Image (cartoon, rainbow, N blue to C red; front, side):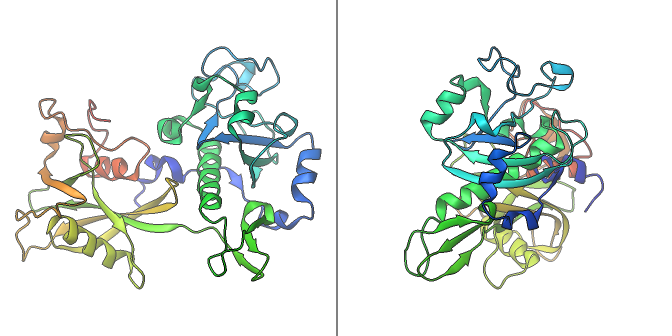
Length: 336
């Protein structure tokens, strides 16, 4: 991976030992809930809870952890609460051991993520400003919190879509700390799935970058071209195919830059940089008209020009990281 790209991938960061062997502990969650040192990351509708003092007044008093020194941190800090505060949960996931030396919890603290019902979330904290979306806070979270939230969201999203056996339709049951679902009829294990996708920065002979506008987006929002890898296809072949299908542009030898999990709901975004095939005309742009409604070449001057008002990918995305890798640094932002 490019050393300049690595630090910008907000959701690839982590400071957790996933502690695989401990997932098989008999009566795992009973033991974790009985341990006063266990800390729990509550999630509701995909949103995580901020630590006390992070977004205004709180009813928690001094029960929930605060930022370093006992006061609110300058950056968002997720609430890892005592297990006794969240007795009523829908799903449980053993995340592993905290490795962070700058967190409120000691190194080695066992961490669990849970999903809460509407009632349980309301009882824990009724203030909606204390519940945050990963996309909005990822860049500002610590490595430990970003990794924990990404891990939790990806696996818990998988649980929601795999409640029944794909072979017989029987209801499956969670096992191994939330990392497996078992069909009691077929006696088979079903493991979390991640869908690989490619995302490509395409550069022409004039060092412009190609961006497309999705049919579902607001006007003037553009991003890199991307798509899912098909069965029997390499990442590089998928990059070449997706770019041609969405833009009509032929590329050569896509160069791998790095990857980032994107748990919305279950993707792994594999980033590439590629140049237009010199044997073809990169100016013959043919958006597919279904998913991609417009494709355009942009120079660095275009993206910096406030008159164009181009809306770019969010700062938590690998798309933004690849764009700024090509640009040579942060893009002046009225874009978001």
